[in-house]
Length: 361
Ligand SMILES: *Cc1c(COP(=O)(O)O)cnc(C)c1O
Image 1 (cartoon, rainbow, N blue to C red):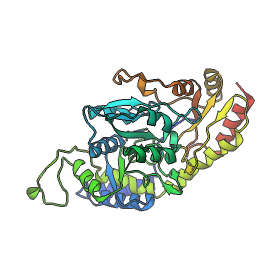
Image 2: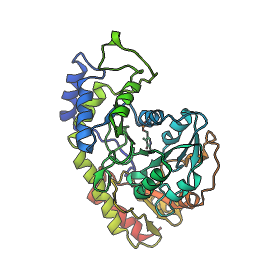
Image 3: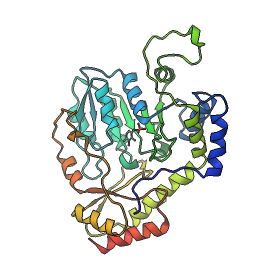
Image 4: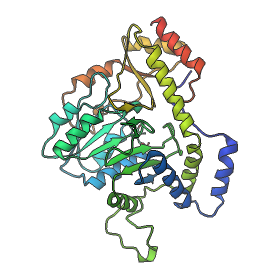
C-alpha cells in the first residue's frame, strides 16, 4: 500500500554518528545544538524571531498565551484540522468559534471569519491545511480592520510561500510542527515564529518555567509562570541533520503535487482545489474532491493506494460546544480525500496513481 504519510529519517551513516556524539557529549538538555537549529531555521525561513519547542502544540499554546487569550474570550478557528489547533484554545479557557470554509478549498473563509467577530473575539486561528496556504490577503485585511491578531497553524506548511516569502514571516504568530510525519521531523518538536523581540524573549521564558536562560539560575526571578516546552539537544541534532536534506525533500512533495495538478485536470468525477493569489503550497497532503468517495477509496485500495481523509472535523468532538452554521464545510467534508504525495511517492507510483484515477471508479 502506498501510504498517505511517512516519517523521513535520514540515512544511518549521516544520522547515527551525530546522534552518538550528542548523546555522550555530557550535554543533552537545551544547549548549543538547539541554538544552532534555531539559527538555521531563522536563516531558512527569513525570520530572526524563531523559538524552538518540543511540539507544535506547545507553539500554539504559547502563541495564545502571548496574545493573552483566556476565560471569557473567543477565538475564531476552523474545524477542518488536527485537534491541537483547537484543544490548545480550549486549554486557555477560551471558546472555539468555528468559521465556515471556502467551498472550493476547504480552507477557512475570510467572509465567515468577519461575520463571526464579536466583542469577545480575541484572535483568529487559520490553518494551512495539507500545506495549502489560506487566503492571507483577505485574512490580513480582516485582521487589520478589526485589530485582531492572526495565528497561523502552519504544521502542514513548512516551506509553503505567501508573496514569495516562506510562511513564518507574514503574521505575528506562526506555528510549525516537527512531529513524526511532518515535512521536517525531529521525532517530536515545534517552532514558533514571532514578529518582535518582546514576544520572542517572553516566549523563550514561557518555554522554560518562566526562567530566563541568559541569567544565572540562582539570580533568576520568575515573573510569569511558564511550561516545560523547550527543545533538547538530541531532538535539535536530528533537526540539524534533517535540515541538510529538507530542500530536496520538500521539492519532492511539490513536484508530486504539481504532477497531480497537471495530470488530473479535467478527469471526470474529480474536482481539483484552486490556489489563492500570491500563495505557493508545499503539498504536505494532496487534497481533491471526488464523486462517490467511498467507491473512490475502495478502488484506490484495490490498487494498493491509500486514499482517505486524515482528521475528524473537530466540531464533532463534544468538547467543543459551539454549534455554528457551516454549510460549505458540510459539503466539502462529504467529498474531499487525500492521495499520497510525499517524498516516498516515486515517479512510477505517481503515474500509477494517476492511471488508476483516470480509469474511473
Ligand atoms: C501535527 C499538527 C499540530 C501539532 O503538532 P505536534 O507537534 O504534534 O504537537 C498542530 N496542528 C496541525 C494542523 C497538525 O497537523
